[in-house]
Image 1 (cartoon, rainbow, N blue to C red):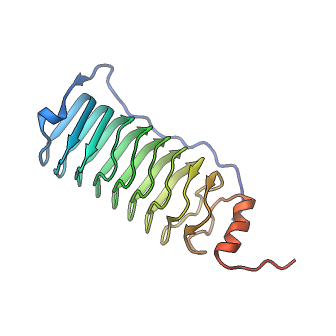
Image 2 (cartoon, one colour):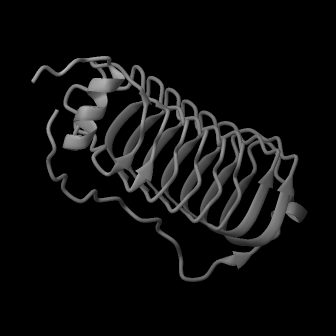
Length: 219
């Protein structure tokens, strides 16, 4: 475990058409296996939605709040969320491909067992988020809080955490080889020495881990 400069992570951005048709999803209704393509959704609140296998394709969401929403097995492709509230939304077992979250509230969002590819989280509040058993590749967390979030037994490949707060986050059972945690802030983590093999950390974090694991450094 040594500190090294990781190369910039290349993430494919959402592929959106120049023109998107406005839609009010609260009027359209979201049912099982519904499909929404090439729409822009703005300034509305979607409450008490329970629908499985919904498809969102080539869409933007601006200042949209999801209240008490369960969207398990959803498929999101080429999507941009800006200043949205997705707190406690159940996206378990969803597929996310080329999705961006900017300045969003994601507290308690459930992405357990989700497949996540080319996804960017930028300046989001994601405390208590669940990524248990998720399969993540090409994922960037930028200036995002993930305090007490859960990555238990997740598969992480080309995942970066830049200027993130991850205190008390659970990584048990998740291999962190090649994952750069050197630009994160934490005082404690749920992690084992085996999980940390090959992880990139800072010198200060190396000292912190000696305390976390109860090691004694002899001078």
